[in-house]
Amino acid sequence: MIYDPSTRTGYLAWQFGQATAQRLERALRPLDLNLAQLRSLVQVALTPGISSAEIARRSGLTAQSMGAAVNALVSRGLIERGPHPTNRRVLELRATDAGRALAAHAQRVVDDVQREMFEVLSADEQKTVHALLQRLVEHSFPESLHLADPQDGG
Image 1: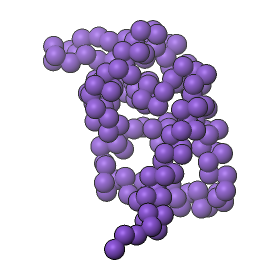
Image 2 (image 1 turned 90 degrees about the vertical axis):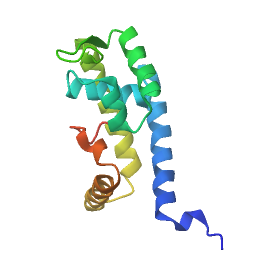
Image 3 (image 1 turned 135 degrees about the vertical axis):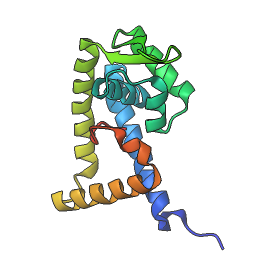
């Protein structure tokens, strides 16, 4: 038997995630950022010295996709690469002053999009949805919760 996908909670979560990602991509375009770049920039600002591979693991993206995002940010002078103190094969990433400023600005844009996306819910409902989503993510993708700021858009 085939079921209508809209009767599946996972499908609805995916649809909402897609809608959110599309709105965020549009809102970030004037800042010349995409979601992978935003995720990278915020992670580097929050966790100086993090590697591109670690950001990819936390984000659920391939190392290649994350590498492209990081390269774009490096070329814009928003993050810098440096040697790891104990592992020559790893490059540490650090946000520049311009990178931290852009990350802060971008997070205000993300806040606006999130406010718009959730305005249909009461404040209590928003807290409930957040708590339930956090539990689901803790269960199914705990490595993504190493993000220090749950409002970063990723």
